[in-house]
Amino acid sequence: MYLVSIYFDEKTNQKMQYYINLIMEKTGNSFMVERKVPPHVTIAAFEARSEKEVVAALENVAERFEQGHITWASVGQFFPYVIFLQPVLNKYLHGICEEVFDALVKVEGIQMSPYYQPFQWIPHATIGKKLTREEMKIAFEVLQNHFCIFEGKVVKIGLAKTNPYQEVKTVAF
Image (tube, rainbow, N blue to C red; front, side, top):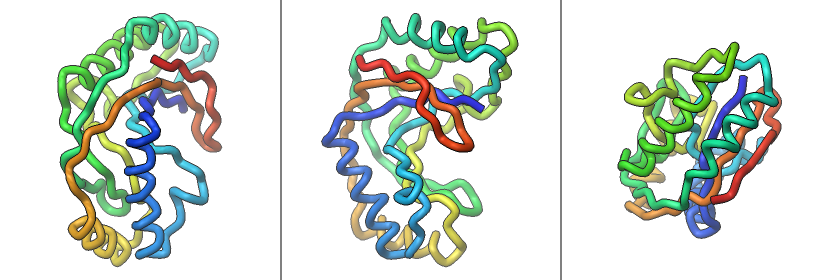
């Protein structure tokens, strides 16, 4: 499986890493930290036969992207064990998702995940994963006391493989 994700400026990374570390500290769940998962939003997930064609498609579409701002406004969860920060889905964020999808869907042999497509996608940045029921309750309590709305800047896009995670290509804006 391949993922295309967007990444953030250092100030945004520090803020998001603060929440990741706080959840780890209060719950004892170190999944995100142990696996060194960087703050990101995945905008496409897919299976592909040709990595080379996927890289070429991503490089081609990424040439049109510029840095942009998003607002982190909410906390959410995917039951039963993921907690995340959710940005406001603005024109910038939707545009990147749509353009990446349109570029990748043209690659021969690609199978796009139905959960990461324009108008079928919940933009999110995971800050806790593999949480137990009790850890999830603690994480929400922690965020009730510490989370506040903040702005972030998108500065690059990347392609990665999963299981195990392996970065394939990154393009800075």
